[in-house]
Image 1 (cartoon, rainbow, N blue to C red):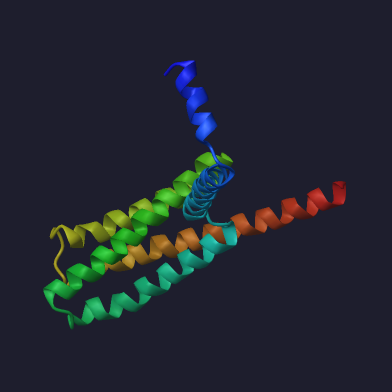
Image 2 (tube, helix red, strand yellow):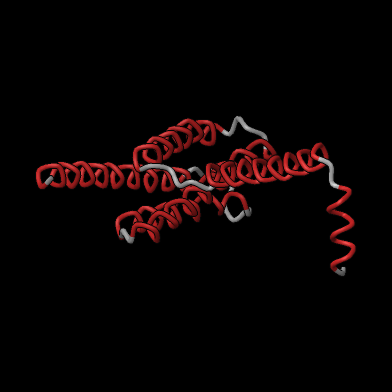
Length: 171
């Protein structure tokens, strides 16, 4: 575009048109900020206490599933769906704890991730058919690994409380 066409466009600008254009620009910016805030909230890592509670809920879900699996009361399809959900939750916890360990440079949270990976491996053997539905040893092994990771997270929370108390004394 040359300068003459810009001047001609500027001459045709009325105050109403100018205000509407600026309102449209402002609306686009506000929508962009809202999208960024939603993305930030969705990708936020949980706090230590939140993650500990979620891990305890996962351990309870495994405890509830263990007697059902031992009884053999589930059909093959329902058993596969339940195991798939448990494996998916384990994958999600592995991802979150791995990100937390990298972000905080904390080896103990990395150990929780390793324990959850071992629990996932035990459960995935049911998903891929290497273990039968009547064999509940893998589920019990996964449960013990998850309970061990919850206990480790309790120690992490105790350490955090101690460090917070020391930091308060220094301030």
